[in-house]
Amino acid sequence: MQMGVSFCRGMLLWARDGFRLATSPVYKERASICAQCHLWQSKARLGLGKCGHTACGCTKAKLKVASQACPLGKWAALQPSGSVSARPLPTP
Image (cartoon, rainbow, N blue to C red; front, side):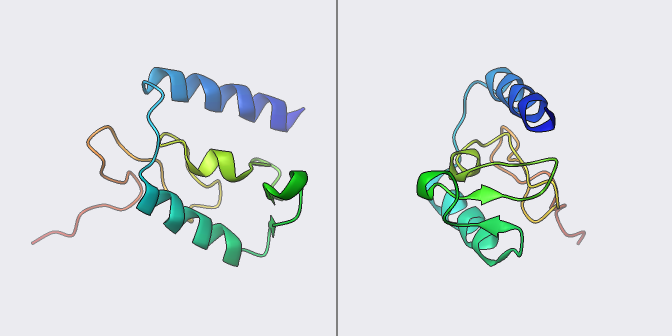
């Protein structure tokens, strides 16, 4: 049930964000981070992989959606400008 709610919420956020996709470098970075996570199950869902976090359950498809973020905070959603929301800019 939780994964269904999370999926619907994610689709709504994606629609509100204009269905933006992450760039190839961002996707590759996210995939690399997930591959190193102890919750990532690479062979699940017919090879798409699956996050084992109860609030997530995502596959590699979620990694391509710009408006999505890791529930563990390992990677953040991209803002419309392309900046990352969870990584504040350093102060001069």
